[in-house]
Length: 468
Ligand code: FAD
Ligand code: NAD
Image 1 (spheres, rainbow, N blue to C red):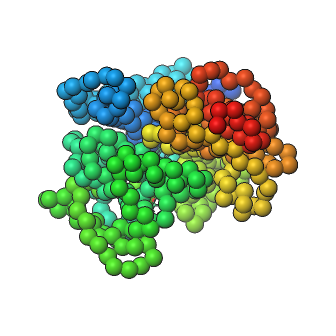
Image 2: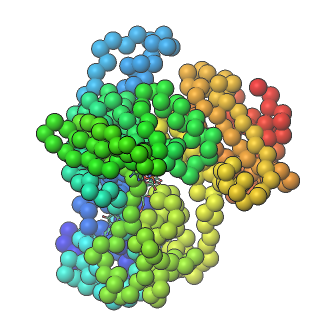
């Protein structure tokens, strides 16, 4: 549909239709605002739906099933012969999941009478946005332009042999060998996908441990489990060059602390060293919107930039680059624009890594509590001692709950294990309501469930778990 069939004046124009932008647009429309959302991709949903959360989870789910059928069915008495990978079909499945989700946002826009202004948005004045040559007027502007892949100097991402996460979701065949630069969330999730499908995966990580920022014990356990699954780790190591040639990619690796370089070869290299705020061609300089030293749009606690009427949310501002963080900000900002008050507790944004086992965290890590000098008690419970985990043949990992030594209030929870991303939900809800470990321990949890491991970890805070 041509943009010129749309109105030219709005209460709110949101630039970017990722989880921050589309959720903000929907909430604002629910509150009675006349809203347009500018998106330059051919589909709505941003990084998350098109080349991020959704396609990666489709491949993680499919590859996990493939590996289970290939390697683990036998352990539970199922002989599956002739299990074969049809990568083309798996990719088609992934694409269909993406398509259904992005079409879903189009439907929601229609339902909420939100105009999709197709094309790249450029802010031309504090209440004007240009899209494909048409200028639109608006009372307020929300910048929700998200983030883009961060590269490495001298390494040319060609999305063929040297790929970013986007290329790694599209490979046409399973490489024999893959080097993943970066042992963060993307490296481990997509490294797991290709390892399960048959690639020989080596993760090169600059720091001395993977999953930077997570609880130390969890990081070590994750490293141990992924190693057991066949992924090779080169920690405290940096890649200083990667050159694609006909035969693959030639890499040079160096110890992070300096020392002798080594060479390596791989069929495919995945660069997964982080993402950067995306503000290209947005016109920020012309209207004077300030950015910080990392190129992120500067905002106050109410998402206001330094220019009146221009706001920003999601990956393009400071904070964790997570879809649910962007969504929360979208809702709170729309409500603030409606004159309501809103608040996000950034300490209670859960993080989940969708590997097997999943890794999930909320609140403070043990290292942070030590650094802040907060006295705490820790309770741990292994999935090995949980009846349901045993019945599921998924006994890797543990739940760890950290509570204030004096008040027993839960300060953090860290889980590595089956369904960790789902299990963290009850702890998050509890923490929102100021729950103590005793509150969780006294809550009746159904048996047999994985949630019982959370209850037992809460009991362990007081030294009285039942099943260990
Ligand atoms: P984005 O989703 O990046 O959307 C911004 C949109 O703005 C884009 O569609 C872009 O085309 C558009 N845009 C930019 N500039 C303009 C312009 N000038 N005019 C018009 N349109 C413009 N997070 C999770 O919480 N869970 C996960 O499992 C997860 N998995 C991920 C897996 C991968 C491989 C990647 C790369 C990311 C993943 N993330 C995950 C992170 C998540 O995708 C981001 O945090 C989230 O998408 C940020 O939302 P956003 O709305 O801020 O921006
Ligand atoms: P990341 O920040 O999670 O990890 C990058 C890793 O690369 C770090 O461990 C860093 O030490 C390492 N590194 C940096 N430079 C290096 C070098 N030269 N050599 C070797 N290692 C190097 O970044 P990511 O994995 O690219 O993910 C980007 C963002 O996307 C994250 O903020 C994440 O929150 C988001 N994301 C979230 C999910 C999820 O929630 N499940 C999934 C994917 C992505």
